[in-house]
Length: 417
Image (cartoon, rainbow, N blue to C red; front, side, top):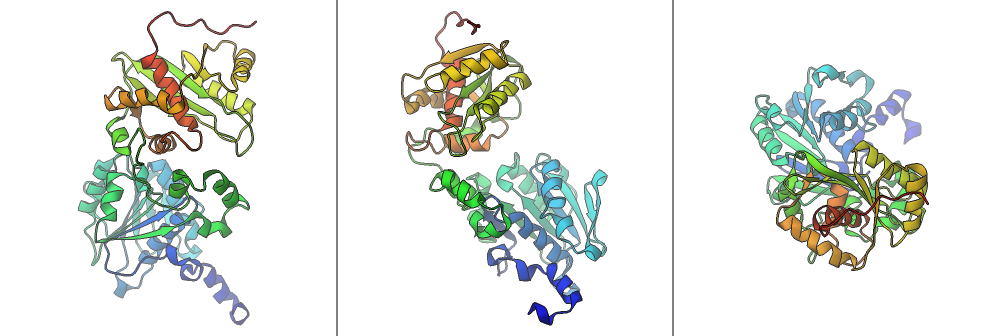
């Protein structure tokens, strides 16, 4: 076929998405108003979204081309880096003669035919009050901080043209809005797995990632694009964590870094759980950040823990010493002798240690500042068996130290021998 094409036709074929796209990257048939593409990491969701926007802008007049488009990402930076300037973003997938002009200072793209796309951040729902559109592309909806407020504002503004439509490209999480869209008869849903896009991913990536996450709930969600709802028997639910989410923490009395060191090294070793948490004057614990790393050397995870300590000006580093404890001691003494280090030792099993911490969540005494997706997914899927919950272990140590430690003198800081 290619031998029968002219150079001009071959050049045009490069930009012809219908030729290159997989069936699961194409918009579904039917009279829908919303299209939600649920896909694994690297499944080609961004390319599908960008190409759909391009197709609607370049549509012939009798098919009602789009002229006013909303591009909404988790943040302005994410929308720009992924939806506009990314390797599969709107600038990269547009032919040179039809490529839009990007005006970063105005968060605006303007096409040669006059179509305009405005970039919005899901952190600012009120910015969608006033503007009106005939098309919208929403990326990573499951990660939006104010998802329902932002979505509602978009619906009021999607009122131009003969058939206003919106497309959602996201890795699924069981948020109330995602569940609502799944049950909406006007929302067409398609799914794409990461392995379907293997030809466009690094050699060995699929094998490596499936070796670690295959068969797990996280793997089903992040690789297969499956919606994993609350797991029966888990101590936490996504709904409970949502109730415990806040925008910011009050003035902290104490900030600590909790470290759960891995037993081994290498790409298939357990992760090194590193959680930063604080106790406030109202005697509540606030989960501030997750610095967890996986598959790195002891020198690298120790540097990560020390960086967390410095970044948050922590008052102590808490580390489990059942396994890898002597190594933690050595690292603390050698690389950061000024750190205040308190070893902790596990006596009860992981599930028994986690139960009183889960009870504190139910009483509203542990709050999450912002989103910590990987940690929260681990919390909501752990039922006392399976792969070691490294982030969760570090979280349990952090909250236990801040809120459950018996009253009494603080253990002395670690000193050189």
